[in-house]
Amino acid sequence: MDFTERKLQKSAAADLKRISLESLRPFTPMFAPVYVFMKRNEKFLGIKSPLDFFSPPDLDKVRPFDAVYVPRAFSDLVAGYQDAGRRVKTLMFEKPEEIARGKQDSTYPEVKLGQSSFELSDAVIRVLGPIWGKKLSLEPFFIAAFVEDFCERIPEEFLLQARDTNIELYELGLLRAGVAVFLAIQLGFCNKRFLDEFRWQVFQRFALGKSTAHHATDLSEIEDMTISLVRDSMEKQVDALQISALSGLTAAKVAARFKRIESQFAKNSPFVGSIYGPEGFLHAG
Image (cartoon, rainbow, N blue to C red; front, side, top):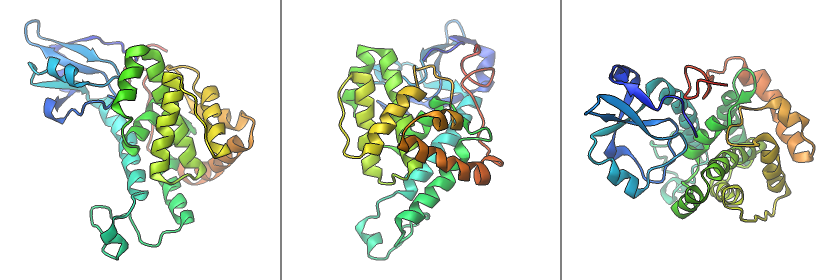
């Protein structure tokens, strides 16, 4: 993804968040522009666009720098969506054997024994619902951030092949895979491993052109929905009206959940933000 400010003056340091090189994980998409500080000309230089990732050779290239930097305000904004992804991941946490025997793990306080599928779906929608914001509208970029922290990482061979073949299709694949998983969760799919696999399949279809086949009709229809909702990597929003206007039983099921979201979660939603404008990384549009 492109970003407006390729170079920043030294005075921008107060608005940047420092990230140690040791904390960077290879093959993990970045959800903000990434900068390094050039001591010679005393400027911050953008080295990674949003959605790109560091491969091991990329990390070797930045070893001479003591850290990388991201815009603090935008990074904090994205962190809210990532935290929500981790919360839903915790809710779907598959209990290890000791918990199954009755020993509660304090690391995952949300995990309850004997939780029914209905209770799990209800708990998940309570986290998912507010993410749509007060206008029931959400940019695919933030959906992808949520899903990145919810799902297991896409296998590195898929990421490398896609990025090195066609960067635009790589980005489109990430966004569509994120939206597909997000809609599947809203539809009531709450099996974590199943959703991980679904994400990988959707990414391969749209980033690498590989065919997919799903046993569940809902999943095939969700894939088709993402084509209509996310037409390119700069798609500005996915909203309730768009989904309600789509044909098909699956779209109707997803849209029906917005009634509860609107009545219970939208009014007081704290989620608001955009990749566009002064708070984002694109100042035009």
